[in-house]
Image 1 (cartoon, rainbow, N blue to C red):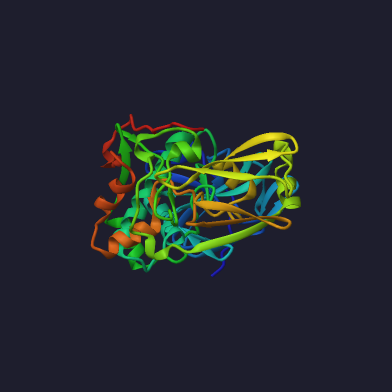
Image 2 (image 1 turned 90 degrees about the vertical axis):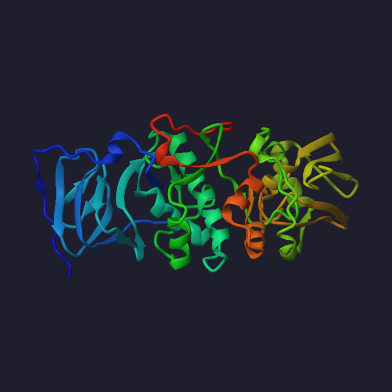
Amino acid sequence: MKKNIMLLVCSMMLLPAFLFGNTPKTIAVYLTDVKAPYNITIKGKYQAYNYLYESEIISALDGDVEVEIIEHKLGLKIEDVGVYEKGIVFDTTEGFNLNGVDYYGDLLLVPYQGKMIPVNRLSVEDYVKGVLPHEMSPDWPLEALKAQAVAARTYAMYHILLNDGKRIFDVDNTTKYQVYNGKAKINSNITQAVESTKYEVMTYNDKVIAGYFSALCGGHTDSSLNVFGVAVPYLEGVTCNYCNAQIKIWTNAVSYDEFNKVFAKSNIKVNDKTDFKVKANSKSDKVTSIDLNTANGKKSIKGSDFRSILTPKIVPSLTFRIDKVDNGIVIIGQGSGHAVGLCQWGAYGMAQVKKDYKYILPFYYKGIVIKDYTTMGDNIKADVWRN
C-alpha cells in the first residue's frame, strides 16, 4: 500500500551512527549503477530525514511505504514534500527495495563531487552476504565459501579503516573493490558461510590486511612485489596445485596499430621488426617485464603495467607468452586475475579434498592470524603498505 509521506520537524537532535564516522561494524557502499529516478519501497519502521539537518524529519511511518525521488535543479525532489539540496537519509529497520533490488540497512542519497549519489549503509556482516554470491558461486563447497567470506570481510574492514570517515562511502559496488548487489542471489549456503565465520578477519602483526583474491592463479600465486611494487610478507607467491583442473589456455591478438595506440602515452611504437622479450619469475612463471627494441630505442614494460594498459580483458593474467604474427602479436596464457592472495578455484579444490577454511587461508596468506575484529578494541588499524 502506498502512503503519502509528510514533513515533520522535530526539535530533538538525531544522532545517526554515520555522523560520527564509520564504526568497525558498519560499511557505506556507493551504488554506482543506480540512477535517478529512485523508486524506493520500505517495509517496517523507518525514518527519513535531511542529510545535513538531521533534526528535520521528512517522514516517520510504520508500515509499507513507496517513495519516488527525482532529480531537480536544486537537489532531490521527494514527491510533493519538498526539494532537498543536501540529501536525504532513509533509516530503516528491515531494509529497502531500490529500483527493483532489495538491500539490507539504510539508504543515503547524498552530494558527492557535484552530484547526488546513492549509498547503502549497512552492517559489515550483511555486506559480506551481498558480496559472496557475486565473487564465488553460491553452490560451491562450504569451506571454500567460508574462506571467501573471511577474505571479503577482511578486504571490507581494511577499506573501512583506510577511509576512516574521510569520504561519504568506504567502497563502491564494482570490481574496483568487490562486487556487491544487495540481497540478490543470497541462499542458505551464503548465509551459513557468513554466519559461521562471523566477525572473523585476517590480521598480520595485529593489523587488518588487505585480503586480495583472484579467480584462478594458474598454478602459482603472484607476489605483491611483482603486481603492486611492494614486498609484503603475507602476499608472497605460493605453488597452488589445487586449481590445476580448471586451467585453460586463453589467446588474444593485438595488431601493431592497436598496440601503438594504447601505448602512445608511454612513447612506445612497435612494428614487425620489434622483438618482444618476455621475462618471467622462475618460480611462479608470472611475467615481470617485457623488453622491446623499438623505433624509439630499447624499452621495458613492467608485466603488471602491460596487463593494466592492454586491460585484463586482453591479458587476463600474468602467466603468458607473446608470439609475433603478420600484423601484430598474439598473447597466449593461462589463469585469470592478478593472482595475489587467495586463488578462488584453488580454494574450491582444497574444499573438495576436505581442507577447511582455517587451512585454506594461511596457505595463501603466510603468517596471518584470524581474529574476531570486535575484540580488537579502539586501536584496530589497517596494515597500510600502498596508496
